[in-house]
Amino acid sequence: MNTLKDNEFDVIIVGSGPGGGSVANVLSKRGWKTLILEKGRGEPLKGTATQLISMALIPGKSLHFTQQMLSLIHGITVGGSSVIYYANAFDPPYEMFESYGIDLRPEVAEAKQELPIAPLSDDLIGPAARRIMASARDLGYEWNKLPKIVYQDKCRANCDKCVMGCPYGAKWSSRMYVEDACENGSVLLTGAHVKRVLQENHTASGVEFTHQGTQHQAFAKKIVLAAGGIGTPLILRQSGIHNVGTNFFFDPLIFAIGTVDDLNGGKEFPMAAGYNFYEDGYVMTDLVLPRWLYWLFTAQVFRFDRLPDHSRSVPIMIKARDELGGHLTERGGVRKRLLEIERKRLMSGYEKARKILSNAGARNVYKTWYLAVHPGGTVKINDGVDSNLKTDIDNLFVCDCSVIPEAWGLPPSLTLIALGKRLGKHLSGQSNPVS
Image (tube, rainbow, N blue to C red; front, top):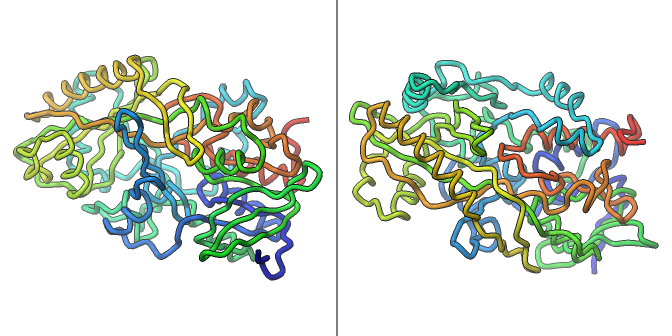
């Protein structure tokens, strides 16, 4: 067993997604000696298919399959899933969090001052997104541009690299918070697989992890788990907390894809505009995929006749709010069935999408198989953690999608940034959110 040289830290943060990255960013600015342990790798982003596969499409690690062969994707890399998602900045469900004693409005306001949150400019809206938006509005839907966290002066039109990791520094990801934290003296160790939290008298004192095939220990006054909706509950179980990893949510989705003859696209910023059909339980947006992913999802449903049509495709994503349920196996397998009510939500959205696409002049509309993203609710507030995100073990906190107590069906990045800011302030004594 090895220990890190000079291994006494003020805080160890396990994971570097929006929650963990935000905590590191806050505490490093306050002079805390911070160690960030990230299971994934941190090579510069290239925006390639090969790199995306290594970050998010490795079966059993970042790609999981349910009993119904629904595929669940999450990113394992510096910056977590924020590297592979589309920089959406939906406001948190304020009323939900307030019912648990958490006010995120100050931290969201702070994030909106700090980060470039705004809808895309017109010149960055691609032709498929424009056509879908015009058709949806013509049918009476309030289909509008979505708020994005994007440095738009660095963004490039006719680009399809968002999901593969933006190599131009245009799309915000938690990597930027981690880089800032390292500039402020934080230590980042990649390829570190945390096994368990070390304890003394029911108080967290450090973590045990493997790195390059060797076991290590590191110690700190505070430990923050931010390894995601799947990674965090597995670490907690190994640390003696067993009432986690059950009754969770993920966001199931499908694509409705049609073909128009007068379009030559295939490369544009995805999820540029859309509409939240809240009462119906789903959100719909445009979502143009890179050619190879389009081929993959199209071939998966045996629509080989549509493989040549990528540049003429107009895809709409339908993402449903699912019900809590299921469990994680001891090795992180995902056991959760898509319920009939969730299928109905997706099919209701698909029928609306068909009408929008038909009105846009599309033909040969088909739907893809089920996919899921944003696993969370595995260590819920008021169940696995309290309103300050502290577990039953003293000095051990959680800050990632696992703490979100209820399914709400929208991208969680801004929510996690706000939770991370709030926790960072609490740990540093700047404020005490809950008396």
